[in-house]
Length: 436
Image (cartoon, rainbow, N blue to C red; front, top):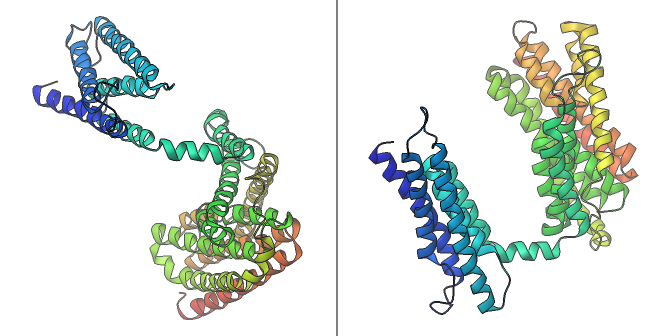
């Protein structure tokens, strides 16, 4: 490491200490001189001390080639960190005794500052700087975090823990290979579907809690539609069945999510096969306008209907077993779609797309675009994509009828009919005037 790089890394180590120390110093700015264990100067020195300790460890003779410190260097760095930890812990203890409080934040922040300063010299300075920013943000958010913890319920905390366990514990250990006939189902992909369903449900719960029923439902629908409009439909159908929210507003959320899905498909086409957008775009745009029209109308007309639900709200963020059960059901649909694809081949692309569209419109869109123009003509590919979109739209009505309440299902049927009619008419005109 030359002198220029060494100076740059030591500067980052000093900056890390200054950043964290700025937050610590601001928080104790009104304390009397000599009554606090560490402020902006101490933390700045701590970061620089970590960087210099790492530089000393790296400068010791190495047993082989490479940038990593030797065993002796590791010992020096470990001893330096241990000595610093003892000093900052003792002073923090005395500060707590003088203030009559009990907190390990200053000691832990000091240790982390030292460690990040050392890592800035030995590792990736971007990671070190990013970790310092995250640390300062967490320290500055103490009041908000404590207030959030005081307000959170056990059901909410349980749902967060389950969602985190699903994502960071269960997902990495699941097999990433297809199992079963007709190409099988990838367990990891099915589990990702379950995570998406749970995430959409939880986002909807949080949005309604903090933004109110009407705005929360619409915001959650937009966010959920980016991932899965089917997940939004399932979530809103469950809430409609439980009487958690006005059915018309819940249907408006599904309409918004459907509109986002139409736009999402158009975006995929624009990225992968932009020359096909002129054929598929008009139908999708017409469907978007129809779905948004229904959503706006239901949002306005649903205000009167929502008064009796205003004191309600969503009782549970999501139900684990129902989420996993529906994910397994979608996995079975994927197997069925592959069986249809193998039976009909390229000639049955539309039939296969209808089945696959029940579970995953994006997968159909990407697959059809990849088959064009070698295996499918432009018209065949566009027909298959629109058939999948139509299948997904109709499936929402089935979900609403099976899970939701009567009026909720009726509203979804009206939305689906309007979107399919508008999209179908636009597709017919497009094929008449623009198709080859």
